[in-house]
Length: 77
Image (cartoon, rainbow, N blue to C red; front, side, top):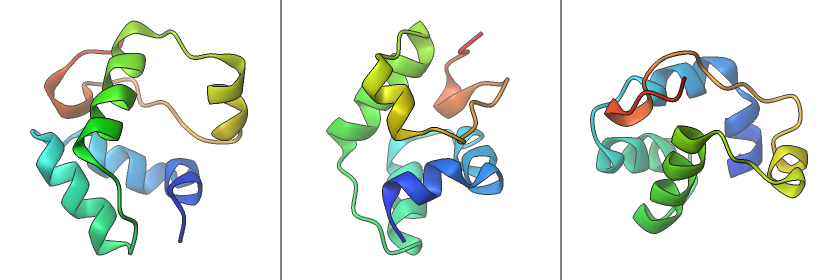
């Protein structure tokens, strides 16, 4: 499974969005066989919190989901 596939999986996104730490999110990705760095997760978290995604970011997750609650303890709406 790839990062892109996981971001398109609404159930997985909902699961990780409710996690309290980036380390827990990293472990959830690892459990699905995907290596992702803390730095990369922090960048995703910052973009989600700001709501500022580039067109290429949006293209990369086309068909994905952005939950309407707090990912990793930070409100995105």
